[in-house]
Image (cartoon, rainbow, N blue to C red):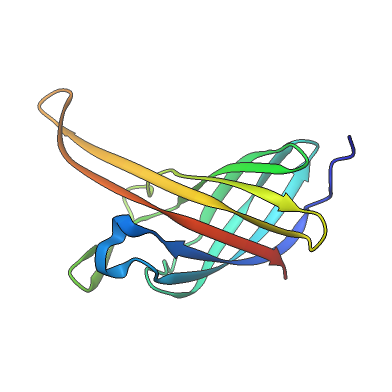
Length: 142
């Protein structure tokens, strides 16, 4: 099987899912520069506009098997909201966000789902709080 070449510049949209309550359906634009070596991919993602846009880039690493793309995206800082205000903690990395999607060779696009879960631990292994998020995403060549 010939592995499609996905090296280069991509742009896309992240759609926030039902776990975001009132913000469900909000969108976040992004750009992604991918480097591919056989089945392995890595890159840098940058939010461009929309709800929850981080001013800091995120690293991306994962695999591409010719149709299925799976990767982890992690922002270089932790950003979070309290009410409508965004806060940035530059002493911590953001959570690992898991993406999976399928490649459409006819129009050179991807579409899939994403999710993350963070459990802040306190008193050993008893979770103090849990934050979850999920949604869908699409991207095309820039």
